[in-house]
Image (cartoon, rainbow, N blue to C red; front, side, top):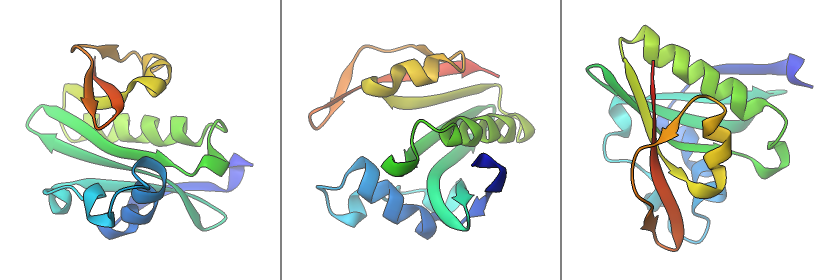
Length: 138
């Protein structure tokens, strides 16, 4: 299945449909846009030329943050997100970052722990959804 997976740069606009449908389907589309999207590195995972997962990386000096990581529900738990996050970690290193962080939904915390990320904040909420800041040293 994943032998036909390709990971490549995409535009911020290409991320919006997946961001919206997976992360915040009950909000307007503008809700999933990030003010500095134009400054980010946006990456998509394509399966048979269909965009099935997206992630956006923002680097500020030696600190990198990824945001709006979303995979189509039909393609979750198949290793695609793992490959996409591994690609993003490597890209953050290549761009000179020494720390990588994200605001992680707590229901995905175990996924991030598998990459060596650790919770470094108290739980906070975005709407009804609990989050914590997760971080790793690159």
